[in-house]
Amino acid sequence: MDINLTFLGQMVSFAILVWFTTKFIWPQLNHAIEERQKKVADGLAAAEKARAELKDADAKVAAEIKQARQQAAEIIERAQGQANQIVDKARAEATAEANRLKANAAEEIVSMQQRAREELRGWVGRLAVQGAEKIVQREIDASAHKAMLDQLVAEI
Amino acid sequence: MASEPQGGLTEYIQHHLHHNTVSLGDGAFMKIHLDSILVAFLLGAVFCLWFWLKARKATSGVPSKGQAFVELIVEFVDTQVKDTFHGDRRTVTPLALSIFMWVTFLNAMDLLPLDAPSWTVKTAAGAEVAHHTFFRWVPTADINTTVGLALAVFFIVLAHGMKAKGALGFGKELMTAPFHAHNPVVVAILVPFNFLLNVVEYLSKPVSLAMRLFGNMYGGELVFMLIAGLFAGWISFLPGVLFNTAWAIFHILIILLQAFIFMMLTIVYIATAREHH
Image (cartoon, rainbow over all chains, first blue to last red; front, side):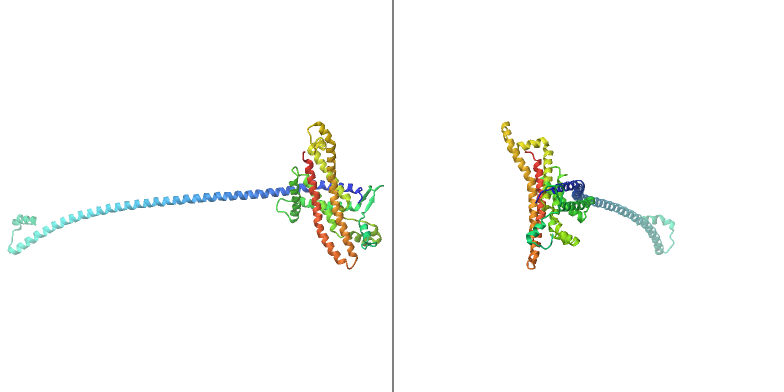
């Protein structure tokens, strides 16, 4: 229970201990702790930022998809219009061609009719002469009656 | 320091309350308790070595378990300081950490078997030497240790007060607080009262610090000695073991609590000393 020099010795020990702790233990440990705290805080902030960025990117992607869809719809519409146009044009051309062909054919028919009629006329004239020759049973001077026959042919 | 009491429990306890003392001169004051000094110094060195090794390799990355444990203690102390003391913590937290760890270590010596030193001496040098070799290895149950600690804290508190207010401001506050007045005459009348009150207040701090820790640890040690008396007989041996265990478990609480109280009060005293009135 008696107080003696011991307490001075303990004070010195304590002083050394405090000095050592202040100098060699506390700064290093505190530095590490603070550094880690900063790292953790930075990491959390980075995660938060990344989350926000992801949200932005998502919104951008959605907008882009929407735009692309719109563009595709426009393109399809335009293509349909073009196709219709092409079909109409083709139809018009085909109609014109058909008409032209029809006209050509009609013309040809008319000319062929003409030719057939001419030919027929020739044949009928000759047949008539032969028939008449047979009926009359005598030589008819073809040249004498030619004028009459030509008139006959023309009348047919 | 015989392990079997020859003159009954009283002698056994008295025997165990002797320090290993060296006289440096005449008078009761010129003595040194070698056991207290040695154990305290060694435990301080153990603390320094342990924390220094961890601090040296401390990384801000993923900590090892040892580093995490040390950091846990440091952060616990730092949080206490932060809550109480608002200012530059670069010297206050190391001080609080030193006090907490050192006092915990010194108190924890109480948990080691009471007769381990005497048994060691007896085995090494025989019963006759053992009877004259005293060794108490709980430094905080020696009032010199707690007074030394408390006085050191007292000077640190004074230094903080003077640093925060200046030597003049500190002296002025001793004279003019806590009783204030505007009339110079009244101020002069109040000076002795203020001064007396402040001196008592300042002196009560180290006294209460030292006495609280010493009382707790000395009392704890005494209870261990009383329980050790139970080991003398075969019938009381088993209850002795049970009581000893129970008291040791309860003592863990006291060890940490007293170290914590000592640390907290130191911080509070420093914070109060830095406050302006």
